[in-house]
Length: 243
Ligand code: TMP
Ligand code: ASP
Image (cartoon, rainbow, N blue to C red; front, side):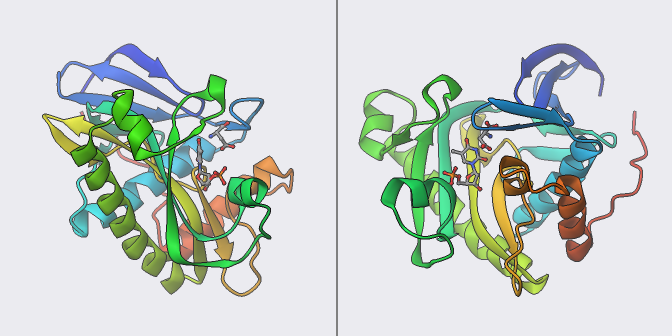
């Protein structure tokens, strides 16, 4: 698979066209962003760690019957993915209160949320990803009702699979954000799943092991991501480049 032109550069990843119309190359950069791009730093090895992390998690989700865009690891920092038509609606599930939920509702951090909450946000940095509901998403044409129903169902299935996976490795999946897209009309999980887009706490100490370390200036960001990866048994060895 050969890279051709750059299709899109996000805050932490760049996406390239390839010589195959159905496939793209996703390149994970070291850029780390918070507060809708207000704070950006380069963290050494972060791109590589997230690329391998994402590949591992997406394989687990595929095995659980969730369609994802991921095809294969191409290099330490790149993966081959299906070309999706992205739906600009972010799906967030929370198992424990943290982040914007606490700010918005004035609740304390660390409450067990039963049942887990499900929220929609519009992917729009300039507007700071405003909260949406299904009615708004449908009226403005960002997603259809059947798509939203499927996205909710898949996002909650991901919660079951990943909460168990992290629990077995001594961690709590506090919350996470997923993005979906369409491949030949079928809804698939796109974007990435890495400690950049979820909250993970140590089960005993509740130490933060995710991007909140960066947002809150706690340091040891990539070290924490590597700790999570090692607890999950993710191979961080070099990827042999296939042609
Ligand atoms: P929040 O507490 O800021 O709403 O975020 C909830 C979770 O979703 C948290 O793990 C971070 C993730 N998230 C992103 O990664 N990007 C986003 O744009 C949003 C809205 C959330
Ligand atoms: N991913 C968003 C950003 O980079 C929001 C965040 O993670 O804080 O700004």
